[in-house]
Length: 406
Image 1: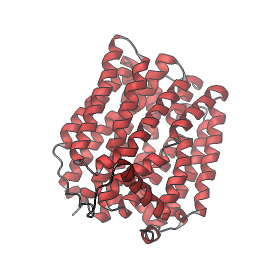
Image 2: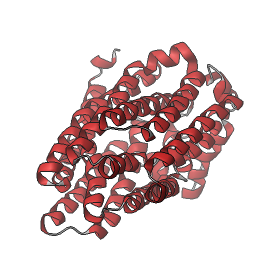
Image 3: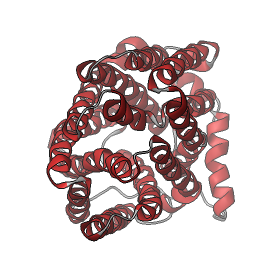
Image 4: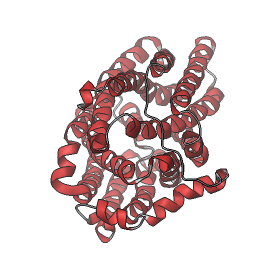
């Protein structure tokens, strides 16, 4: 059955598009709230780092919950929680900015976002056929990209006119609507786990880690992505700070640049299925991350907002290609009953250094400027990507190799 004839997938896609529009508002609003209140790129990095820590901690048990709790109900709970947290920030900011609230509410929202993302990944194989997974992920990324083009522009205009808290209020409302929409989705039952006692939380997480370690490609991806996430985790903060502090751009320009950047994600989602089939997993993933490093270095040498937008678009195109290929491969080789635990273990492990990386990069930018930091970050990104040539990732079709290690 065609994806477009699949009612549940169409509904899931529509809901994710709506939620992505709201998410793109917070993508702009939260860094601006911190910058307006403190004027500090270091504090921007700290908030981002705390979100990363919350995500990592949540990742330890997110897969356990996703594989044990009704997944549709779990998505609704995560949406409602984020609606309440972002709504609280917006209401408080109407009376008086309270920076401490950002250090509490935003990481909590990040924890629920991590749980949502893990559960979201486990939903796709329950909605589409096995041979449609990469294409379905491409459509989901495309919806994210389309929403993200309009969202940051609107968020920038709204922030410029009414303040970033107003943009965050829109995000809160989008989560409420998304939660209502999830109620209408019907998913196929998840196959039962093989007979035997269900392990405790720690053993459950370790089961996901063990599966990753036994798969040569997934093992290599986890190690290399840990290093790549360290380099790229705080990239949005650096771009916002570069535009506001070094290029003296208004809030609206920040929105336009981030919106233009997401065009790269749209192009990636539209081309990833053909790219992977033609070039293979290895070339697609390694090539994408290598080009991403070049784009990051070029960001540091950009002299105006248009050039920043161009190279941000290239960067997101590359991470889109690599990310969709990686997620699709993981969904294809992982048993359904284990997918939540494998996904949470994968994301938790490779995100471990992300918060530290955000703090290091933003701290270095405050001391030495954004340009040298981006040049170094881009160079290191290229070297890490090319090192994948020494791993099983280099193979054009790694599915066979991955299957041999089960």
